[in-house]
Length: 110
Image 1 (cartoon, rainbow, N blue to C red):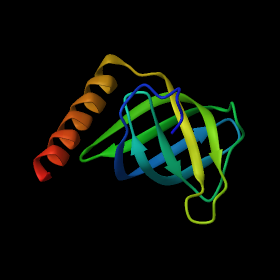
Image 2 (image 1 turned 90 degrees about the vertical axis):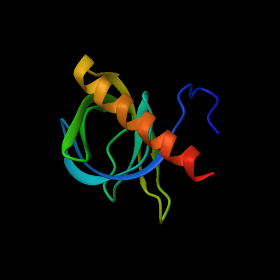
Image 3 (image 1 turned 120 degrees about the horizontal axis):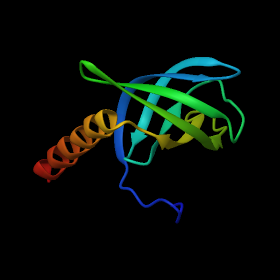
Image 4 (image 1 turned 120 degrees about the vertical axis):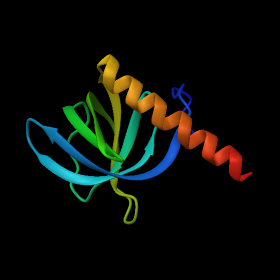
């Protein structure tokens, strides 16, 4: 596990739209935290790319500005790690509520 991660990640499968200066891609978010996400995609951008990502959470979309911090070229889990750089208070609240609900559901199943 990457020692720099400070936020708890939650496994998900949520549709997302990724946009940078060089590409627009639809993909799936595989894990999500208050600090970022891992998006599965056949198409990869470059490390350091500044991006906007929209993650569909139920009837809402959480939109954030971010930075590509990791690329994974695996055959089955190809994708990009994106660190959030800017979330509005409203977007942060939607994300936090979703993560709290998911973690509560996971604890209830144990």
